[in-house]
Length: 248
Image 1 (cartoon, rainbow, N blue to C red):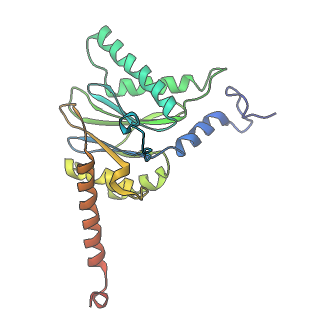
Image 2: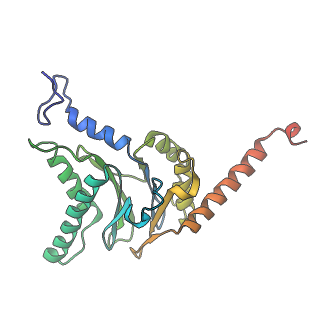
C-alpha cells in the first residue's frame, strides 16, 4: 500500500507523509527571520527578484493581521493568502464579540488550529507554509511565535523558517543576546539573512514593530545602510584577525 496517497492514513512507522511533504514545501520557500529585542520585534524576509515589468508592491511576504499583529511566512504564497484572510476575519470577529483585540498567542493558536485541521480531514491537503507571528499585547512585551504545517506552535526569542533555515537558526543561536537594543535587533535579523542571501540589500525586506504596535517597513535605503554597516564591521573584524605579517 502506498501510504503517501491519502492524508488521513498513517504509515506503519507512524508517519503522515503528506504533512512531511508540506514541511518540505516550506524548506523550498524563501527564508524569513524573526528576532525579539528588548522593546521591539523584527521580521526580515528574503524577497524573490521581481521581474522588470512586475509591480513589486504586489509581491509581499509580510502581512498585517490586525493593528498590533503581523505575520511573515515561508512556503506557498497562495496558501499563505488563504490563511492570512482567515486570520484577519478571526481578528475582526474577536473584536466584535469581545470588544478587545486578540492576544498574540490567541491568533497564533487559531492559525495553528486551522493548519492542524487540514491534516486530519479527507479531501483536503495541508497548508504548505510555516509562519512567524509578531506583535504586542496590552503588557507591551514583544512576542514572537512560529507555526508549521502540522499545526504545532511555539514561542521564540529568535527563529528562521524557509530555505537554509537551519543555517540561519544556528547563526541566531550563536549571536543572539538578551535585551538587545532596537538597532542590534534589526542588525542581527539582517546579518542572519546575509548568511544565505548573496545579492545583499535589494533582496531583503525588513519590518519592525515597537510598543506602540505600529508596523514600520524599512525603506530600501535604510536596509542598504544596515547592510553597509554590517559589511564595514565584517571588514574591520577580518583586518583585526589578519596576522601582523600579512598587513605589511
